Image: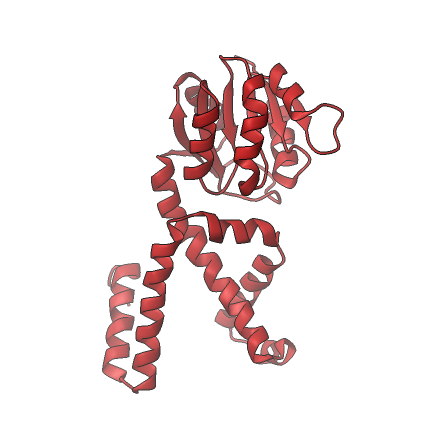
Length: 260
């Protein structure tokens, strides 16, 4: 099977990445974006697989626009970082096969080999099986799960991790920290955290705001994080050394399996 692929939002960073990837695997790729000769509706009408590479808040609007133009045997998929709402929108407005897709890498990645792509079955098996086989043959690792489980896990993998880096950067600004001075006194751990914070905050602010705001599973994770922070502050405020040591040992046992 050699399908024709259309990428809606194909001039964006991930859209361009997947255009190059699909073409490198021998597929014909059509692209539609704000300034392309062909409209999203036109390329959707011509394609076997339609890929939505648009900002998370725009998914439902774009689905409404293109879904009536897909032929019934086509597949509709997305590349967004959350899955519950995009998959629900695709299922609601397109009666054909739907696959939620989340590549767990960014556009600076050179090759898909060894990289993980999550697939969330929406409706149908033919295109899901094709996509899984296609990605595996190209060297990717494929994980298949439900949209709900995906978002639950991403609330920890992305939601919490990004939240911590945003909070670190915002705290430096709030305290008026002199970063040059801090770098002069940096430990390896601090330098790693500072590098991660800089990298994260240099990315697309709209994308990372959407990841925080639109994954509803983030709320329970951040509530748990808030409880732990409050406990830590309480222990430090009250100079409770045994309590703090106990917290550290409990966390070590969970993360390290009891290793010292």
